[in-house]
Length: 254
Image (cartoon, rainbow, N blue to C red; front, side, top):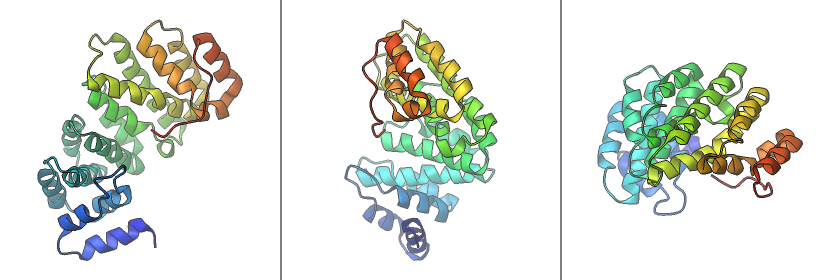
């Protein structure tokens, strides 16, 4: 039995799910219990998800964990056809707490696991929104397990490309929102390029000629990713040299 299954079984029989989630959240700490988050989303019902989000509105780290569980649960509802959950997730994508924002990306990926076309239909409506929402969209689609078909990979490239265009056009660049979006673009491109190399390299390479300092930073960061070196080392190193970046290095955790 996996840890995920273990947690699901325990949650299914505990009389106080909130206490259980708090106790096993691993927060405060460097990394929350993601296996438990997914188990909670599997076992909970809609009333649980809304309660966890409401109770989790406080400042305690375990409050944040409860909110994440609720948000990922909304992703399950959306995957099951509750389309109104998409707008709720969109609202949570701008939560000031980074773990909750990450929960939205996880929720979107649950949608993609069930219906990847629905995932892209949802995030396409988010691409002109504020940077936090755009970040959720690209983080949601830049997941290798969701990009196994040519169509899915091409749509993911379109999503990341359109968000990159918005960065190039941005006037306000000092906010945490903008920096968070830029950081996400610093790895998402490498994921989608690998999923569809011919189209991906063509689209990505176009940005390498930009004089915009933030776009150049995004290109440089992606060229440091080992996945691009494994894909086509000669191409990556040539592009690296052309843009004047630092030598490529292995992937870092993101």
